[in-house]
Image 1 (spheres, one colour):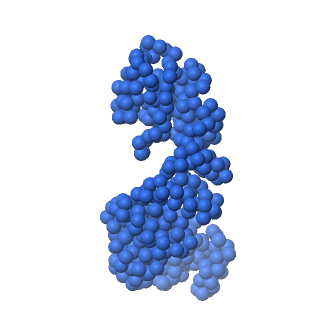
Image 2 (spheres, one colour; image 1 turned 30 degrees about the horizontal axis):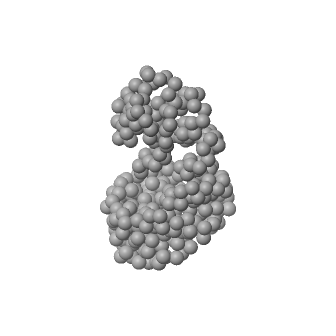
Image 3 (tube, rainbow, N blue to C red; image 1 turned 30 degrees about the vertical axis):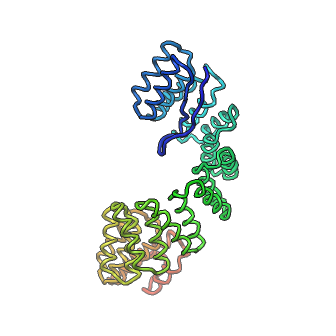
Length: 383
């Protein structure tokens, strides 16, 4: 049975190869089954593939099609059986090996996935999608050199493979090869100038090297393409905040909060920005929002405690510090902050206990030692 393979896939869908059978009869049912699969009409797709198998139980393509349906439905065990059956009937079916690799990938069995992708490439080496997927598995395994090799081969086979360019850039960054990463992201933009994610990653690269103007330009370019891109708004705020551009940072963070009202981290950034410019009440409001959206947000609670201390509201500060410690008991600075709040209240016994707790975690913490000495205590618990 002559069959062509189309490896394109709509954004957001699993990378499943699509079959374009040539001819009539059962092949037409396989065409229809794959059309149903693309439209997410899984029950109808199963009916078409099973109809083929009733006429020809040895049809590798029908078993393969069923495997693709079950893979999309995240029924990995059933998909694996179908792919294995397809391979039993046609051991040269590289796409079924790829499908088995995707099953392993869904289950986060990275080494087994990589092995199936390698077997698929042994049968059919010139397939950019498989090279790309294998490269990303290697990246997840921190095998960066092998990832780069596969991703570059994917780009050799398909120079306009934007996702491969982005993954290559991310991998090169992980290897500390910033200049090469820059070129990879530029390559993605040459293939698709409207690719907002590439602008964001270029912006991040500039930001990491403190090239703030260039970073801002890239984030703005991303937003020109995708005005609701959360990451671009937030990073734009970070760049303005880093440079002391209060109004611009505030606008960017507020837009991020508008787009994602439940994102606790953005309220922490808003709180820090308000504090940096002396707006304590606005800072308290923002930090309370952070805690409202994530009551386990230890850093927001610590910062809120610090504001309360500066306002002389030590009892409130103590509540926030204790809540932060409950979330993360190993954070030495919070124990020190708690000790300071107790000391300001005149509760030297609890202050000393907090400083000693910080020293249990880090015996070399000079700040805690100095504070104990200042209240006439030693690191050893005398109680």
